[in-house]
Image 1 (cartoon, rainbow, N blue to C red):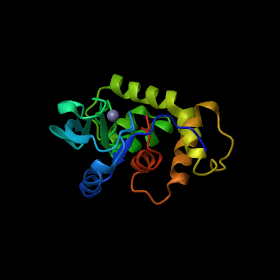
Image 2: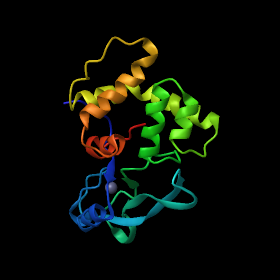
Image 3: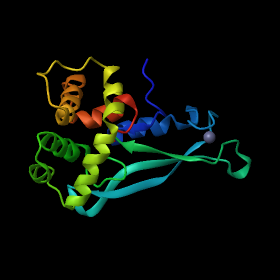
Image 4: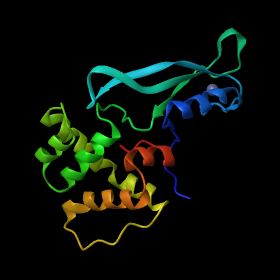
Length: 189
Ligand SMILES: [Zn+2]
């Protein structure tokens, strides 16, 4: 069993969220483990490459209630939409397109592919963020399947290898990054 850090909560659809929300009263708080105190606590909205002008739902907030003598811990947490990326105005699909092009060495092509409104600097930051997370991603993926055999690659192409591993781990996924987040219960980057 591979330790991938604190487990996060993701849902893939409004339908899945409804089912999760219905079970809230029977669900232990991830912070204090007390059952029966979780209540809905609003939503987080943000922009992404498909919605430059209108914010869309990114996450739902949940509160472990300590009000009115309830026994909760008073902390909140988020149930993220699996196709959104925290602190980033891209969907996982946009990020996936961007990374696949960037891994081939062209940040310009990558930006066009991501259909992106972000600046060069933001894109470089995203790339660095992915780069820093690579070994964590690789470890998480190894819990699903071994890395695919690829011809020997120069060091700068380890990114391409990680992305090939991601695709091998979730071969039927529309967006492997969304499926990674949902299945492994951790943020991709
Ligand atoms: Zn709690």
